[in-house]
Image (cartoon, rainbow over all chains, first blue to last red; front, side, top):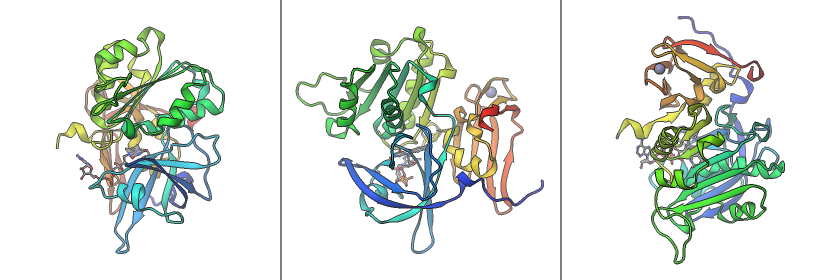
Length: 252
Length: 91
Ligand SMILES: Cc1cc2nc3c(=O)[nH]c(=O)nc-3n(C[C@H](O)[C@H](O)[C@H](O)COP(=O)(O)OP(=O)(O)OC[C@H]3O[C@@H](n4cnc5c(N)ncnc54)[C@H](O)[C@@H]3O)c2cc1C
Ligand SMILES: [Zn+2]
């Protein structure tokens, strides 16, 4: 086997990102607005890789979905703190405005939605799995798309719903977006949304039926993604229309 | 830990693939040599991390691609893949 030595394509080169602002979304989740000098633009659903280097030179690298719409002036990521994690506690809690770290991207051409693809659009999120789907919803709103869209968003409790206020605003525009929340652990008094994990009954009862051939994007912790994808394909949705983004064992 | 909880999508390894290929490989469609099913690389099941990744067919679980970072470079073993189609728009 030969081994050629070549430079990585430009979008795969590491650059320095500077944290311009920090926004607390929930007690465990924080958005970072980043300045990246050579940002080539992105599509909704893509991610970046972030690499941290410790004082001793030790490096750790993780993927984070882009939360902002391509049309938005600011590049944002949104990160949930995993308490015993290596990378997320820094990004979601200790990070300060002005901090710098390495970033590369945008990455991925598969879990992507742009308005011309049309719909209906059926989005399913578990916890921080909302992040790339939020980029799609923000993109949809900023280009005035009326694509019929349903978001089913599973969170543990009301205070843990990431982007709750913004989702509420988007859903009251009456432009074809419906948002359904389900809370798996704690529900406030008088809660009218779902009160359990996403399951077959929920997906049959309120989901977009296979006959409407929705484009489906499922994102969140791996077990949630696997179970939702399996149910939807059993219900008769075309496998090629079901796209998944597993975040790993954590999150949600 | 169960292997299932560690599964990611081909898309999660897009960074690693991007170090190797100038085109967006996750959008390319691979045909599994074991079962003949075609699907986007981004939709394959992936096990691994920044040191390497194994891509398995989403239909039959056969290994389609092995990507390993070694001291000599990144090795790309695609013997489980019969054919790869890259849409011209993504090239
Ligand atoms: C494509 C992609 C996009 C992503 N986008 C986002 C995003 O937008 N926002 C976001 O918050 N996260 C996102 N993630 C997840 C993110 O990459 C990290 O996995 C997450 O932040 C945890 O990293 P960490 O270093 O803090 O934890 P780690 O140090 O990796 O793990 C910490 C702890 O998490 C649990 N854990 C980790 N691995 C395992 C395991 N194998 N089995 C069981 N438990 C485990 C354990 O408790 C472990 O100790 C994304 C992942 C992918 C693949
Ligand atoms: Zn196969």
